[in-house]
Image (cartoon, rainbow, N blue to C red; front, top):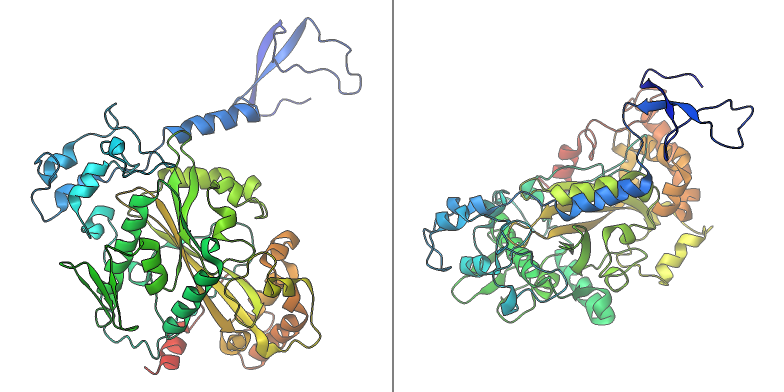
Length: 488
């Protein structure tokens, strides 16, 4: 066996347990020789079990950056924890024995946990002292959005997300979050809220659940969302901080925030889904502890609640081999001031929102209807964001489901050819998971027609090779088209 440049020889020595020894491959010995030429690799081989143990140990002692220093930047000068100043609170260290980690499976508002710490370094006493609706922009490092002054809920459209990539691999493929667009409203707002409320009435805990340990995180998420809505859409929303009533001018509703469960507040006012994962202080890994999800495909809150990330993503192709380790490491260190966004997509018949296991709509994925028309096929984009909440240290997924008729691709440069390429040549396991087969018999010929038509019109060059567009996750000229369709 030739010695590679990355190896170095060590003089012959008596064999020891676990040494690597080399003999002729054509005539394997019946026993190990008394002396062997030992080979030392530049990076010593580590058995898989040892690597897993090391990763588990690292996760247990890995925390996100503390946000206690942000207390000194708040405008109020004093808080009620022992009469300490905000600056004094910021200077209190995290990590000493008296600052124990809050549990993730017990009610964290229990009196015995008042001095326990969240992953970002705040105790329950600290959080209570900050009161309702503290300055989350300062605490988390994510600025509030600019007011959307020319927004009209009657005509507003979601941005035209086209998160197509080639070559197509299973990756997170994320970008930095645009703070102004974290929660995006459009003209389907009233219809979508009603649809979500009806789903909750019908499916209950398969739509909304909050397990013990998520009490602080749920309230914090609700407050951050409402602060965003009031800042972004000031003509439609406001909070009376004296009475803690939230006013929704689109629905003409008033919510008493002292009486209504935080996740129900989100269900009734925000047309997006939320899933909260919490850090297990015993392992350092994260599990799904609370959520309101109305747009899942093939799963429900009830079927996933309590699971850790690894088990949740078991059905995802290549997750264990290519993503599990990097995801665990990403979550362990994920800071509050660097939220991200990404998109996943599929093709659906009509516009189904909630497709739990066994639903008739999900069953349509198993056959190709000869009666299917192009007009019934829609692109479904689940636009997702991920952020860590500053006080609880919980990580929140939220995702918005957007449907677009396939016919919209007609004048979008390069989009038909790119989607055709993914559907025709993408990895089989990824496409099966994506669930597009039931419409491909109609969608692919239509995409090919659109692609040829774009060549004839000079929109793309003849022989253009599909690739991820420079404008990803949109397309060239998307803003002009988006504005035109909204009438400005």
